[in-house]
Image 1 (tube, rainbow, N blue to C red):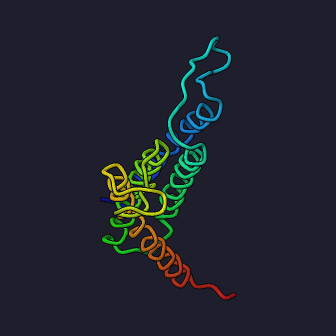
Image 2: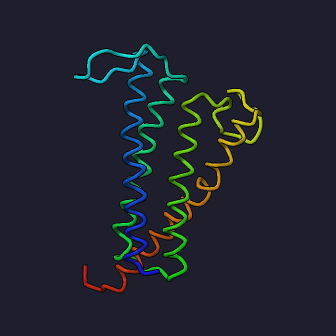
Length: 167
C-alpha cells in the first residue's frame, strides 16, 4: 500500500470514530437528564440509560481524542521518514487501537464491572465475562499505541535531519 492509502484509511477510520464520539455526547446527555429528548422534536422518552455519567463523559471525550490522534498522525504520515513496514504497523496499529478503545469505552459506559481495567477482579469489581472482554479489546492497543507514537517521533526527527538547514 502507499502512504496516501494508509493516510486515507487513518483519516476515514478517525472520522468514523469522531462521529461515534459526537453521537456518544447525546448518550451522555440522555444519561444525565434521565430521558431521551431532542429539541425541536416534541416529546421525550422516559428512559434511564445504564451506566455512570462519568463513564459516558469518558466515552464521549475518549472517542473524540482517539479519533483526533489517528487523524493527526494520518495527516503527518507523508512528512515522516518511516520504512514501509513501520508505516504499515503505524496505520493498522492505530486503526486497531481506536476501534478497540471504542469497544472499551462503550462497554465501560454501559457498566462493565471492574471497568475492564484488569484481567481479573479489582477494587471496582470485575472478574466477570464483560469485564474480561472489555480488558481484552483495549489492552493490546494500550501496548501498541505508545510504541507507535515513539516510532512517529523517530520518523519526524529523521525527516528533520534529512531536511538539513542551519538553526
